[in-house]
Image (cartoon, rainbow, N blue to C red; front, side):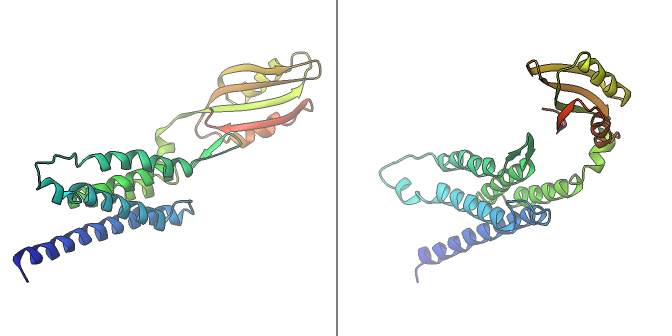
Length: 235
């Protein structure tokens, strides 16, 4: 066995270690998402991390034989640049919009971060890849239930879309009811109106400790209101 062959085996082992470390980092981040029953779990994050690490390995070393002949120059960053674009499609697939409520943003960000960690490990930057994994994992665990964020954020936006019978002074009555329930800076925008009914948005600010459900239930006492669509945090 020649020295060149021994070096080749050593290099292959180094690449395998990079892929394994990337997989472990992806699994750690995916684990937190999995216990929250998100669409992108352990398997998705592992695959993204491993694929990213492999892309980086191919980008750095896949064209070594060409670079050593005929003075051919290649840009080893071009595959890494395409990862950033390609992973966006996977992240977009985890974002869902249902009845004006958006979910999956954190999962999409986690997939994006996992890709970056995989690229770092694939490039041989083990320390920063592992440290970033630990940091992201604890950030997701720490801020998942929003309890800490709720202590920092004092006011949140309150937005409702209301469909009601077109009666005199209905807008003023609803605005007064909102003010009685501690909704501040109320702005009303009419979306549709005819002789029978009116559709409008009521937007305002409430204290973060106020239960939005109580406001909705107070609005429901008006017999002229047909439908209320609540958007948490506004649009």
